[in-house]
Amino acid sequence: MATTLCGKDILRADQFTLDEIELIMDTAARFEGVMRAGGRLLNMAGKVLATLFYEPSTRTRLSFETAMLQLGGQVISVAEAKTSSSAAKGETLFDTGKMIEGYAHVTVIRHPVVGSAAELAAGAGVPVINGGDGAGQHPTQALLDLYTIRKEKGRVEGLTVALAGDLKNGRTAHSLSALLATQGVRFYFVAPDALAMPAEITAGLRARGVEIVETSDLAEAAAQSDVLYMTRIQRERFADPAEYEQLKGAYVVDMALVKSARPGITVMHPLPRVDEIATEVDAYAGAAYFRQAANGVPVRMALMALVTGQE
Ligand code: NCD
Image (cartoon, rainbow, N blue to C red; front, side, top):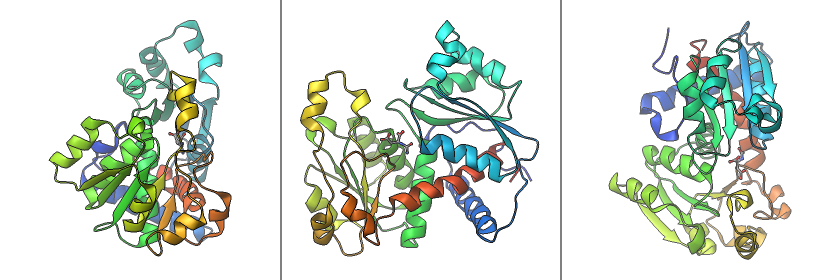
């Protein structure tokens, strides 16, 4: 039966109804269960995913490709789209979209410019999934982050979640705050002043009644939070390298910080980490970031199956 997600583009984390979020979580859990039991899924047999990555990626591209293969489908990709695709010859994303629909049933794009996934989607007659558009949005990361919190904590409602690091430029924080705002959490937004969450995002969430504490004090936020979501200072978004040098290393989560935090705190990170989480934290039971990365596979399986009506 076709769901409301069938045929849709996935462009922003605030586009989903509560029912759609539940459907994605449930479908991901079902697929994960089948895989864990050693079963084979063929939902996407005969279907092709195109991946267009105009910016570096490890997890997002590999997990989308793994997800498609795990569903029995196939993958075509342009790895360094910026230099090796016709974008280098001046082709617009709209035209690339027109062309993609002749080759693939669903496509994922990552691009340095905000709004680029929407531009591709305007041309493409097949569902387009935003795998990160500049400092804009990263909706599939937010969905796998939510899936991870549900698995790690067993619930989401009533939790206190601290988002920390480069909240200005970090698209994962933008998308995750929008998604979690629908789930009854309260937030700490932890950033140096220069990297604070954009005021329009904070104001929009507060207008919806979401409780937010803004601070630059990581230890204080960690002491009050159930989940600590660290992010990387987004070097590639700085116009002035000197400013990056000044702000890098602003926050480091080490075992001393974990010990002073709320007992049982779950530590998450979309990865890649630079130096925001000391490697000594990896052995801590609540360090969830590698499990989080693995959760990208079932969540992206669910998304691709749902937008193509193959769930
Ligand atoms: C993130 C991204 O690309 O926005 N990575 C990811 O997809 N897991 C986070 C980052 O690059 O800092």
